[in-house]
Each structure stands twice: as structure tokens, then as C-alpha cells.
Length: 168
Image 1: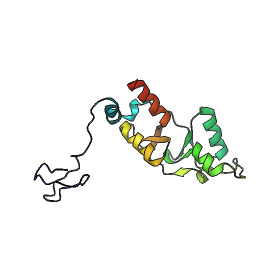
Image 2: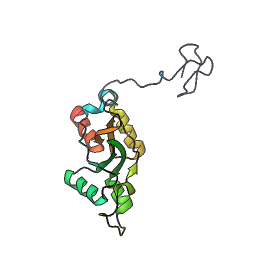
Image 3: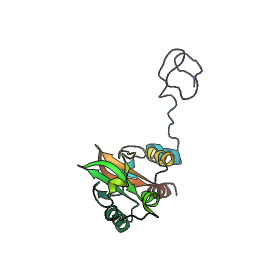
Image 4: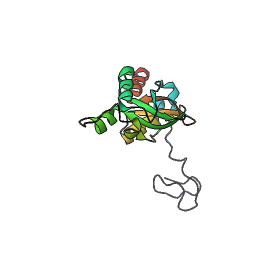
């Protein structure tokens, strides 16, 4: 990356020029061109269509959480304590932590099987952030919060549906 101040050729991705110390962090930010790239970088998550959250408390039973996921046909529940997001319990947690075990789901609490302190985004974050987080973290759901309180979530399916509608 060439420093705009002194012309020094720096390694790609460095934060500052090795020669003059100039801040280079804003030099390699991708700018939207068109099509998919523009949609990903310019669309805030609130325009993607947040799904309403299924909320449970940490002390609720795993059975109640699973039934809520079945009833609403959502693959997750957000675990909330005093209005703040403290965890997420997903269909993947059911498969990885519960399937094949001899457990009484009515006696097992969500807190014991949830993923604590999940990665979150805000409704103003760009769609690209959600796609990146889901890809890197192997997530299918990202909680969306406002001041630490869950207001919804985005899912891989929802993102794909949105992109199909806007690129098709």
C-alpha cells in the first residue's frame, strides 16, 4: 500500500506508514462498486428484514426453548436476563449438546446448554458484517441488539432471500 503522504510502499493491511507514521487504515477500505458488492456494503441490517426474536430466560427449561423454536419455526432462541442478551440457544446446540444423550430436557436449563455472550450486530451495521460474521463463525443466526437489548435476528436464509429479491 502506497502512503499518500510520503510515497513509501508499505505492506498491505498495515495501520500506519512505516516511514512517516501516517494513518493508513482508511486507505484500503473497499468502496462499493455496484451489484452485490454495493448491496452488501450499503444495506443496513434493518432493511434486510429482522426476524422477531424468541426470548427465553436462562432458567427456562431446554424443553420449553425447543418447543418455542418448533412453534415459531425459528432455529434459535435468544436468552435474556434483565432485558439484556446473555446467550443464544440454537438448533445446532440441540444437535451438538443434547442429541443422543439421556437427558430430561424439562429439568435441564437453557443456561446449561446455551452459547453464552454470542456475537451481535446492530440494526445500522451493514449486511456485509452479518455475512462475514456468519461465514467466519459458522453461524446461521446473528442477534441484532439495540443498547444490549435484542430486537431481532438475521439468518442465513433471510440474507439469501433478501439478496435474491434485490439481485434477481
